[in-house]
Amino acid sequence: MPACCSKTTSWMKSTLSEAITIVIEEFSPVKFLPLNIKVEESIGDLLLLIDYAVQYREDLDVRSHNFEAYREGDEDLSYGFDD
Image (cartoon, rainbow, N blue to C red):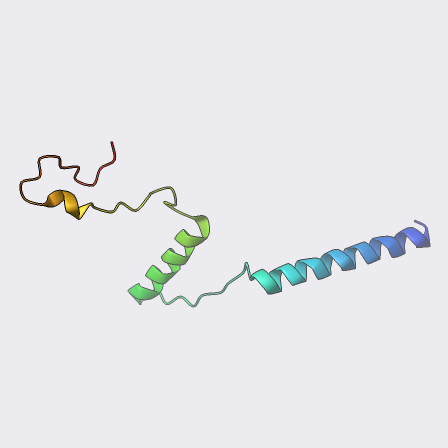
């Protein structure tokens, strides 16, 4: 392999390595969490972090109840459900 190609390849690898380092430092996609299997809260925290990372049950919407519909004598009750 010619010397010029070796320098170019080396430069590209170092540039890519620097870019990856910047992404890891700025966005911190890697996180270490201490785990104690004897402490239930520790396991719960880990499960919550995993659920958040994979966006588990993200598609479920929070339903709010329309408490105005629960007044006495109101015949048109919607019970918080959308039609």
